Length: 208
Image 1 (cartoon, helix red, strand yellow):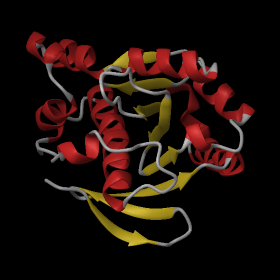
Image 2: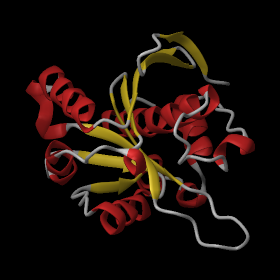
Image 3: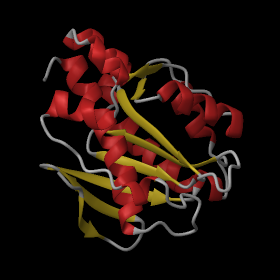
Image 4: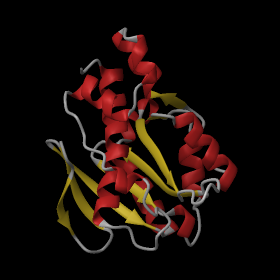
């Protein structure tokens, strides 16, 4: 299963298809736009903020010639069918609302390797992610399959959603710190965040 761009509005907003789901995606390096996105999430989910599941992923500048990878370049968040792809390395500023959102103990931030992602965000930007759950351990415990502790996001999507997402290698190791992301990069970033959210939601809801 491949992701695809359904609509590109040309203003940083687009709709990305992931299997049968259409994900409204915002790409930005603006702290103000992040404020607006978070405000929308609070308004949409105001009646269940105490059990909000958030897909979280990051991408960082790849390493070259044996050098260590660079700082986090992208922060991806997904709630429901809305995804934020924040070019945090190129941001004009990191808004206080993002610090508050990530530190809110009511929310559960899910992803594969999410503990390491949270550590990078803390080390590079001082962003503290209070409540993180690694999907590998959640799936292993919920489904009674210990081997899932060693699988990747693709395998978890297959186990929980019944689809196998394609993840092209050339995108995974691409220049995530570029001023302008390619369409393939944006689709990849959105797909990872949405898949993390949807796998987490289904596991918590018993919808698998």
